[in-house]
Image (cartoon, rainbow, N blue to C red; front, side, top):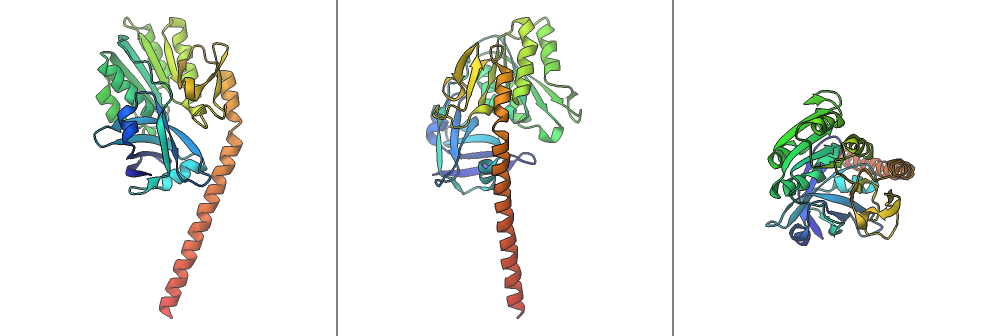
Length: 296
């Protein structure tokens, strides 16, 4: 059992959570992920990228969005509760060395998994520029931590409520066209964002790595659900990635395959919400009955 020691709601359905996992905190490297199981009985295995870790305290931090039944269950847990199982570290670590100038592009909750990569790249002696993107200011996360891990931070919002009113690709292209272009670009976020980051850097010949953790299901290579075509070859994201050359990924195929899971995810989420509503109604009825009994 892994006890939850910290929880914070970052936006409407995005949460930061830290829990005890001493082995993972000690052994993990930037870019790796873990699997969380909320309960033992029929619990779904949820792959989550490690956003931070405290080796001394023996804790790891993840950021997740409550988009399905299992993440809704996870979001209901609080400090003092425990997770049934946590497995990790899994996946191949991000390639970290002294490249020179590194640009990190984080979109939405993708800013969280890019945080340890920023720390590692900075520690390796790179000049780190981080581009953080969100639909609106209220959805921007980890800004303070990314500023601490970067030499320069550029913030973009779709609606212009904070930073530049731009997509992440606008400042990325400017940096590619500058007198000091990046030697390496890493993008983590929605697949469509990563696709266009890779398309932006390709004409300049700048190596661009993307993290395809959004397509993972089982996380250990058993289900085959995370198959992607990279350079014309089938790769398994959870055991051979999650980082791949963004210029080699068959994005259209990946995006098409991801849509196949949407109806099942929506159905599972609705069932969980309906279950939650029935529990709330039962609790309200019991409370009302207790009030009437006390009056009598």
